[in-house]
Image (cartoon, rainbow, N blue to C red; front, side, top):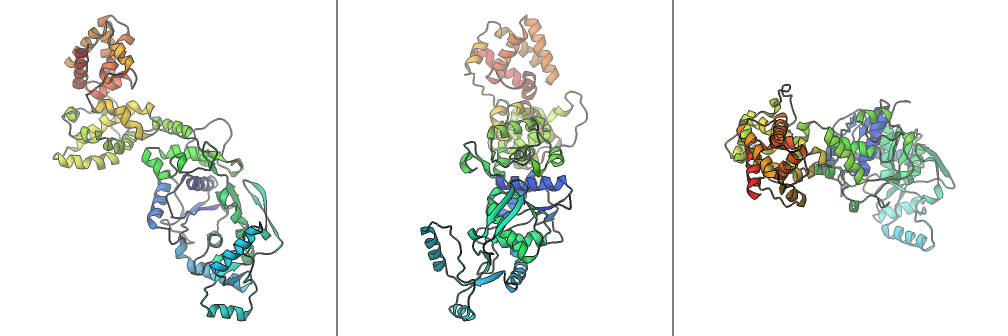
Length: 533
């Protein structure tokens, strides 16, 4: 394939939504597959609604997804500027050429005249379009209208009685009749270019080879092809990707849930999960596999396997994928991702300031099992969010801070199998931050009513209280010794101990719960459970 140059050109009038993010992803994957260039430019000619804040939000979402760009805003490149409002002279230059060649003309029609024309066409049942009132104005009429103070727009002169054919790389052969288009505006009266004109100038001057975008842009394509032909420019390849629908088969909207990429980040979705999910919205590599690394996507993506039919946004599938990536994530990264949610629930403050966690200052979880030396780890969120608490208590040593983070890694890792997204973490780690255990689960109540329970809990409490630091292996050993000494089966030990420690018969591995709670809190909960019996 010849040199591939593709672009993503969002309008900064709102956050990056899933549909736009998928378009960016498909362009990025196409460029990476064929060793091409991915360009990000900003279409900010909607002066009233565009803002730099939204631009920054969009770019931040692209970076979060891992979609780096080779040229464009913030990256630079040989074909800038990469914001349309900084390219106005370029648009005026090429509009001048179209006027000189007779492919465009100045139109002086007022809004009232255009509205009357639209109403007339609609009454007749015709498609509203401009009928060419100013197409062949006499010089004296032009001078009269200018004397009246009318500010003209520039319209493209659409050829009559012509059909435009092009081959779409997704949809196949497509054709449009020019008679249904009408002469359209390319430069507004304030000198700002319209989308269908500016995008052609931008794509040509930036040497874009393939235009990969949403299906909703398909009707714009004939208008753009006409400008390419009028200027004598090569027409790029077009590929229009189908819409994304909700599960009810209607167009994806806010009522289907989160639509902006930022919302997924704030809910604790992992970027690699969202990329994997979006890649499969309308593209299929073949086969039954649904989990793809970014490297696999880059090596396999092709437009030939992009479907014509709409893609359906399935939250259940997204949650399943995200759960998979959560379980595959490094413990330090997972704990750091959990920090904002833990802080919101007050758990981070508890970890830093509550006396129940002072035992962590002399306990190093990274060496608890005589494992390898601690690797450098991600804890940027943890350091940022805990700073106010450290200052409030006069400070905590760096080593003590790391030990608390090691504990947090263990706590979050113990519940990862239950998480679809990180915002769910608080429901599952609550057992580690409070000692007010309510045993109101019917099954747990029944388990604790067993005849062997008092002997089991008493035996384990003694072993825990008189022993040393709890590790996963030591906790397993103590549970086995308790079963042996009390003469009951392992299940009759594990279930009442779990119920006593958590108030439930379900949850993380029991040895992990004991390790995270620590010796004193395990012994204390066993004592409270014995008092209830």
